[in-house]
Length: 183
Image (cartoon, rainbow, N blue to C red; front, side):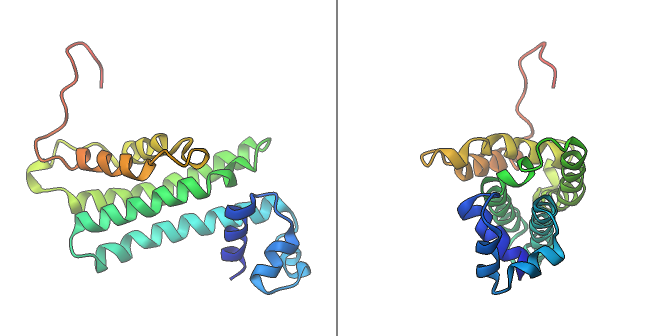
């Protein structure tokens, strides 16, 4: 598929990769790409949306196929980390188009927060209900742990994120903040 080929090229060569490289990987002519995506920003947005949809769809599939809801959550979080690390430049390619970047971020949040929420709800033990952090904050925390991971091969974002998930799923309730600190 054209968007899969573009995504792979963007990961290897960046979002400024030549269109002919994308066309060659997709097995189509350059004109085919321009016919579907007249500008590079349109192609970048389409690839980003396609990758968000793939990540969203994986949540439901993993919940059905995994041995446990926790295994599904952890597998989905690993996919999400990979998405964040390898696709970090896609949204950044729209610099100068704050409305477009804001719309992409809203799309990202609208599609992925509910998926994460459903996985978290399924993975939590009944006794943990009422002690949970919401899906938006979990995804935000994962995103913060992934910042800079693409530029540092020694930084193991995936390991740190799985530790975060262990804390989120901790059966003993949330960590207590020191007195006087706001949540």
